[in-house]
Length: 285
Picture 1 (cartoon, helix red, strand yellow):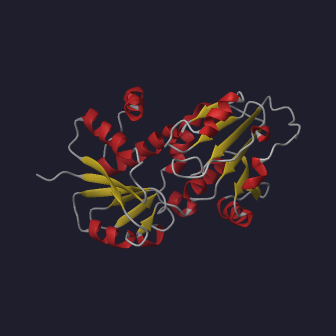
Picture 2 (picture 1 turned 90 degrees about the horizontal axis):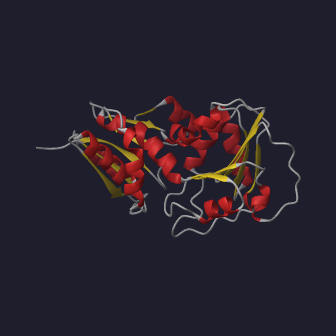
C-alpha cells in the first residue's frame, strides 16, 4: 500500500526540523502518511518538480534556502499572497498534476506576535535584517499590519527595491546592514505606546554561516527581538538580546506556525496544535 507523502527541499537540508514537526502531527492524528527531507540542488530543481508531478502520492513540498525565489517560475500558478511576495515556501500538487505555490512564511511569522498585534499602538516600527525570500514574506506581513519598516541588507538598493515592490507607503527606509554593527548614541523618544521589533530574517548566525553583527544600542526600549534561524535555536543574537533586557521570539515559533498552514494543505486536516509543548520538547531533544 502506498502512502501520501510530502517533503522539504533545499540545499543544504540536513538541518531542517520540518520532518520532525509534520511527523509528530501525523503520529498524533494517527494519519497515514509520511514527510521526508530531500536535498535538491539549484541545478536539479526543475528536474525534481518534473519527477514529482507524475507521482499521485506526492502531496507537495516545503521549500527552503536557496529555492524560495527560483521555484516561482517553475510552478503552474501562485496563490495571491505568494504572487505578491514573489517567494514560495510551500508547493501543493493538485489532482491534475499541476503545481500551486503558496507562502506560509507570512502567517507563520505573525502567529507568535498575534497577542501584541491585537493591541492598539500609536506607532509600530520594525527593523528587519536581511533581504532574502523569507524577508520578503516578513516585510509584506508587517507592512499589512501597519509597521514602518527599516530594511537592512548588504545591498541597500536591493532593500529599497524590495520595499517598493512589497509596500504601498513611502515612509519605509532601506539601509546598509553594517549600520547596525556599530554602537549608536541615538536617544530614542518615548516608546510607551509603541511596538518595536528587531527581526533577523537572514541566515546570519545559522550553523555554518557568519555571525550576525548587531549592536543593541540600535534597539528601542521594550523592543521584541525575533530570530527566524532554527539551527542553532538559541542564537547569539537572541542571547545578546536577553542579556540587554529584551523579550525574544525564536525561530521555532515561525517554523511551527508556517508548518501548520502547510500541513493542512498537504494532508487535508488541521494540525493538532494542542500538543505544541510536547512538540517543542521533541524538537529540542
